[in-house]
Amino acid sequence: MGPQLSWYLALSALLFTIGVVGVIIKRNVIAMFMCIELMLNAVNLTFVAFASFFGDVTGQLFVFIVMTVAAAEAAVGLGIIIAIFRNRESLDVDDASILRL
Amino acid sequence: MLVLLFILFGGLAIGCAVNVVAQRNPLYCAISLIGVFVSLACLYLMLAAPFIAAVQIIVYAGAIMVLVVFVIMLLNVEQEEKRNIRLGFLVPVAVVLAAALIGEVAFILWSVDPNPTLQPSDIGLTKSIGDALFTTYLLPFEITSILLLMAIVGAMTLARRTGMLSPGARVIPGAQLLAVSDIDPSASHDDQTPISSATSDEAAQILGVVKRDQSKRD
Image 1: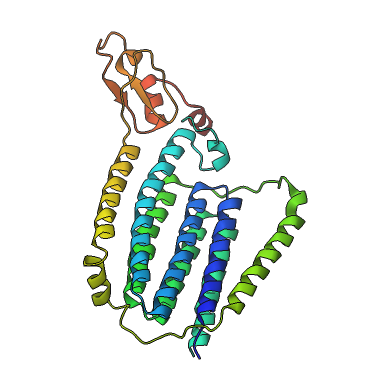
Image 2: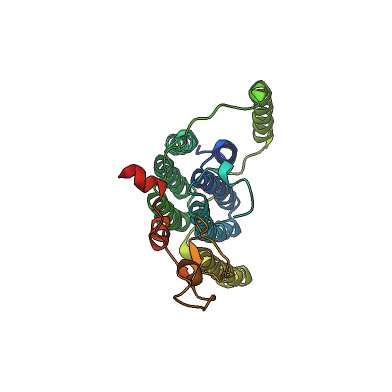
């Protein structure tokens, strides 16, 4: 007997929770960004697990699209991070608590 | 055998994910995150999704993480400093709530019955994914291209440095943009032409100002 579907779901939930905790407790913008990527990957694992266990290709297509969104998010997000660093000389989110640049 | 592999790669993924959160140096976080991506790719292979596994390695561990590491190197990020915890009295509440959440999730996961079994199928192959992507899901595919175009335009807009300033502009740290007339009033009366400088040092040099850090270094 191989791994059950619920095992994959539990692993995915754990990874997602670790990502949420990281976003909450991290102060560094880049570290928070990486925790968001972790959460996206946890959701991807759920998609692939459901797609494989139910024999439906749709889940894997969604993973593909989530990866595209993650790539776009990386480009724009890192651009924003560089803009913040240029203005504040710091990557700490507490230094960037004012919306005004 | 599969169970052992699941425990191996799942444990690796969780360990690396915890390390991502626990590390203070962003570069170590990035390396751990690559570990998470690779172990997730192995799990995708176990789930008979070879295409997604390959894309995971190429796009996530390859492209996105290279971008992140590049930005970390570019910005020369220092370590996160430790801070005192505010609202420390909420820690027991958090522990209790987390235990309740884990209990609920465990109850739901173990009450799902019966578990479907993994069927041998060809849905993970590139051919079947391509078939579905270019027939049934053509519209989301095209919309994704628009999203990527928007990301390109957005990234270029964010990375652009120059802009137009009013004549009375002063040096803004970070924006590093000043009107020509501010530097040398006799040079030009064209207020619309700004001088942009890439760094604070360059701006200080143009203005003839000695920055605090430089004097300290000397």
